[in-house]
Amino acid sequence: MPVNKFPGRFITFEGGEGGGKSVQLARFAEYLRARGQDVVTTREPGGTPVGKEIRRLLVEGDKDKFDEVAETLLFYADRRINLSKIVFPALKAGKCVLSDRFNDSTIAYQYYGSAKFADTSVMDGLYKIVAGDFKPDLTFLLDIDPRLGLARSFRKAETMDIKELRFENVDISFHERLRRGYLELAAAAPERFVIIDASKSMDEVAAAVINAYERRAATLRR
Ligand code: TMP
Image (tube, rainbow, N blue to C red; front, top):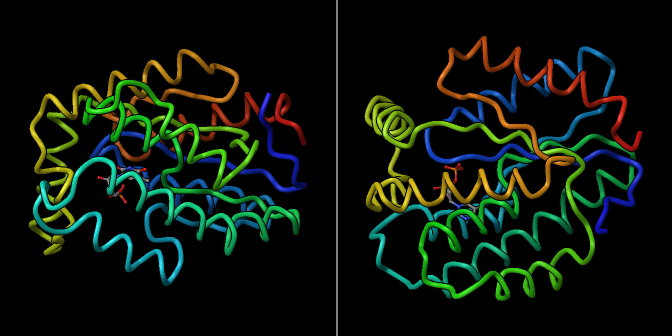
């Protein structure tokens, strides 16, 4: 069974659009730091300077500007850089790393969402190349009805003049498929996933994340 063999913990936040991952990750980081933990936060795509350039290619512009194979390769290139420059060094140093998205996003979006790959063998092969046997210790899935999540996302993009809407602009069935995909991934790995209802208020979601973490903390490796 693949594991994280480093001394530090690796915790990921996953989910469709508008589930509030970034805010919740920041709040959870604050909670851990207040308890004396050395926390490093990162994101995919875009956790490193080169990754930011890859991110721009992936999240801006026309949804059909490249196909699912090119898109998948770019996500794994970004993942490799993020793992080698940020995640692995921090975990080796015993820090707790929180990542806004990781490999489950690729399975949810590029496999379940795009529905253009026959199976996950392309992703599984690439994952092995970029990460070997490494896996997160814990994954919070911020689950939300895509209609509600997308409405939140578009509202935020308008008020903050955000242009990163390439995936938001794909049709609703894509977002429904990826949500079901995430729920299947969570059902297949209950020891790693915690499903959080992200339709609730920010404070309620933050409390649910902390409660779930406290319940799981005893069973985590360290
Ligand atoms: P973010 O807006 O949550 O930072 O994520 C950027 C977009 O990239 C989001 O629409 C989800 C998408 N994405 C994938 O399609 N596959 C992946 O592997 C990752 C990490 C993100």
